[in-house]
Amino acid sequence: MEGMKTMSGTSLAIPIETYAARRQRCRVEASARSFAGLIVFSRDPDRAGNGLYLANHRPIAGSHPSMYDQRGRGYCAIIIPVDQDETLLVTSPYYEPDVTMDRVEVDTNLPRGLARILASYGLDSGERWGLVGEEFLPVLLYRDIQTALPFCSFYFADDVLWSMRTIKDEMEQQILREAAKIADAGAATAMRAYRAGRTEQDVVNDIDSTLRSLGATNTSLTCQSGVYRSGEPLIRPFASDRILELGDMAQLEIRGSYRGYGFDICRSAVIGPPNDT
Image (tube, rainbow, N blue to C red; front, side, top):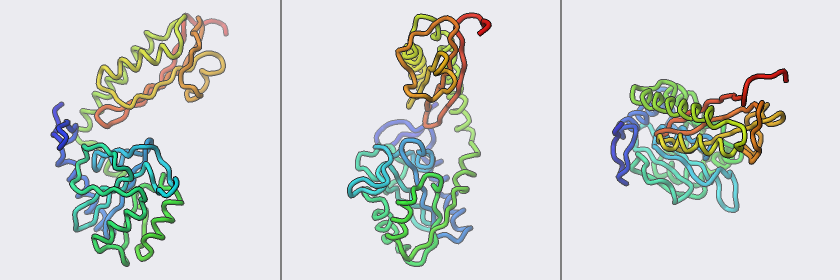
């Protein structure tokens, strides 16, 4: 599947015009609610979807609401005024270059950066702004934003992005079908790899090799076997040097991304035929 090229020369799975159309839909929704615009947040590593969906941007460096003199490290904000160009605010200068927005601002203090950007728009006094990211925006950052922008009012509007992201276009559906095939290949590898004499780590190594050979990234895998570990798939460590034995059951989580879209399946396995235990 060929996509558009970014300034860095890499290929986008989704055409750059699609990102612009998504942001325009945000403007329409914001205008319908009498907002000055939307401020859309993302967080590394587990809530990156909004940024990827609107700007092909994933925050980096983990999420730290407060660390030394930094605020919002590992977060980003996409500011989309109703009638002006949008801005991507990142909290680290080491962001990936393949963003699909022309205006990118860096500030290690997210609330301060927001205040500066809204002031540059002339939209920091008396305006109503919609916020997207209620489920993961910490109270500390929210209060700091209110302090930095005391004359604005804020209203959570997560349903705007949820409604948009729920409906997949044909290109997204094609990517998801390919991602499903990769997940299935990982599951097939898991069934072959899970056998007596090997370790849990051997199993996930084989699965990871299959997934990555097919284009998957950001893989996260578990193999948890035996009486105590097989009952819950997310006990640390996700895979150990435990040697698999005849009769062992296991839970295997197979997760990853393909062209920015995630897959996540779970499989159970047993070594050998069932017995009375």
